Image 1 (cartoon, rainbow, N blue to C red):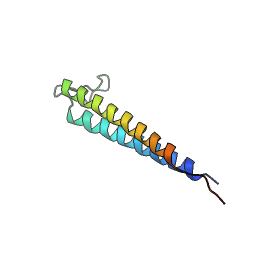
Image 2: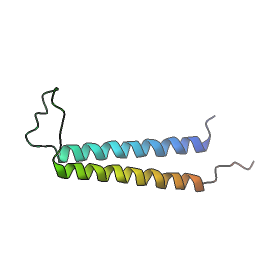
Image 3: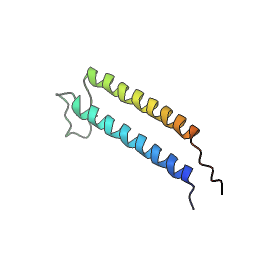
Image 4: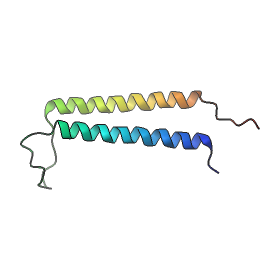
Length: 82
């Protein structure tokens, strides 16, 4: 059987990754460069400069979320006293 701690760690990690991917997608679609030919597979997608700053913000929020989750997991008591 899988321990509660492992399930909690996997859940928090999956949530963090999901939020990061969603945030990156939202920033990329919101700040897409208007002259970008997105239908051509040889041209990489690009964002306007403000979008780059927003993407750095998403990365910063991800790092802070993972750090807070680590502190939360460290302080939890998962020992089963049976």
